[in-house]
Length: 259
Image 1 (tube, helix red, strand yellow):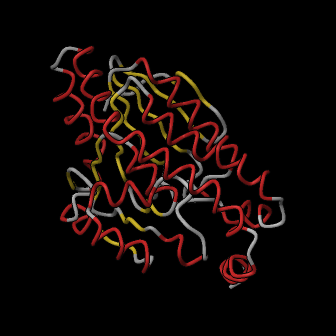
Image 2: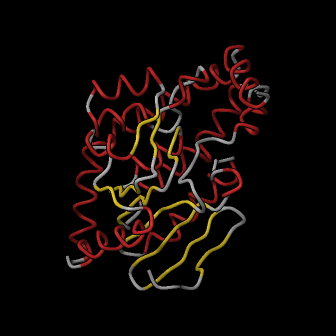
Image 3: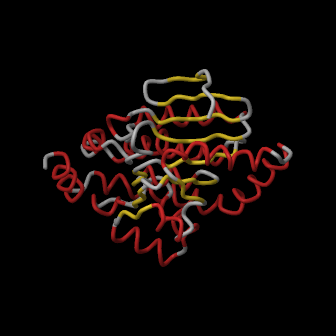
């Protein structure tokens, strides 16, 4: 993919524009691109900034797409009141999901390495997904005693069906790119070094069609799932605060942060 000049840069998310295609990169490689509230808010802003591009490619810097929520920040959440936690979910993490679906741009996730927890939900909320061979997907929330806070319970079931969704959600197991392809969670698997080129090739298949017609078709399938996604987000915002403040969550989080 040709070099381009940054259109928007934050400490944790960048937007680069090359003609009709924008590339949004979650840029916290030292944290495997895990999301804290500030990064989730920056991602929402970046997706909105790129909305006038015909296609947006969303990827992660370094060796991961997005390793979910930043556990150190989530540890601080465990001592907050329920309303504050719910506001965080709506204002940052869930805001990024809503921005992806509301964008006039067709968003292609170029999944490199881990896409787990909220990272998997972000990938599934994109319109299309290309995965490198190193990609790994997991609805790992259950291991912390919480539920998908960003629409994953519905999105996984919608794409892969209830049988696969139940297995992923209840076991928290991580699957490889080929398994994700067979489960219809991704559209294509390619060599890691070809990932962005493969995403751009998919973008070019979209760009040959009239812009407004493409947007209308996105709006058509978003409309078909809108109520279900919103219900999943609303449910998570009601249930998740109790889970984040539970003794179960605190114990599991402590074990991961202090192995």
